[in-house]
Length: 402
Ligand SMILES: [Mn+2]
Image (cartoon, rainbow, N blue to C red; front, side, top):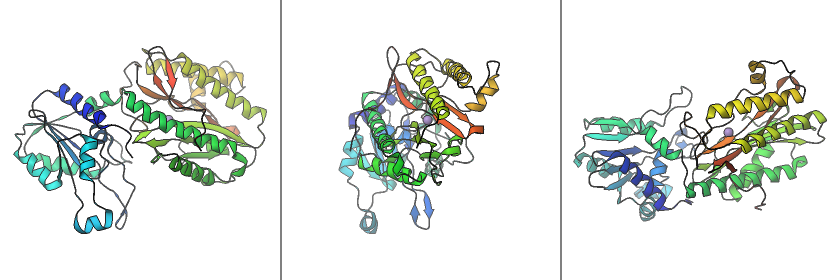
């Protein structure tokens, strides 16, 4: 269920229209279903820009805003006949109300309506993904190729949308807070019954169950449940090993609510905690608190990274991992990732890392110490919102939801 109001999505479109002026059209495509095998598909996740402007979670849809006439419509494959029998028909009225657009059209009517508009310039989003290993949703290119037949000039508004999405409003903060609170509740449930779990998989299953029962749509990303030496692998998502007694378990998980993510990490110990494990865990916990306390609007990501480096370096000395005369690389070996990223509709959200922190930006704070020789990795991560004077942790870590 969508917990954001139609005013939120309408205002996002209005803000974009004010920025772009009164000529041309905005064309934003959503995501299509992707084949998993045969005629089955992967679970659907909407394109974040399209969702931000519409609130619509239907596949193969596109949004058109005519900046001159202010008319807006969404086109989507309307399920009728045999498709409605198999997959159910959509409630078009509720899609229209949720999005606040003027009309919902089927795909072909949408394209023909578009053909009648006086299109010279089109504002759209192109090619956000530079990776070879994660491919863009093909529906974007399918739409772009079809649009090219109209002989238009296009402008990429990806950065404009990112600059909007980087600053959250109260509705977004509310759903992010729900996602974080659900994640904390699931983590507490695990912590309180840690001895009853003998495999990483059983912890993952319990977290998935908790997320569903507590009202999340699922995981915002592949959960990490890493015990023992697996905790040193930063993106360990196999979650398939038995958990030995007296070993650490690093959990990096996040619920998704109304397409907004939480991203939270905790490191627990099953069985007896040795002094050594305790030292590493308290060192990282201390560093994380210290960083959050010292964040202020105006701080740059570079300053945040330097502060983290200094804190980690101090703690590595005090736990005996390094001596005082160590190099930058020595610290990097223990902490090879960034301390922070934007979070929102995407778990690694869009945003400008050159910009100083400002009110209502939401970022993660996630220092860690990964001591490979000893087979122990510790990461502590919370999501924070930048406030007028500092930072505040998103979500409530103190309530039990079940
Ligand atoms: Mn993170």
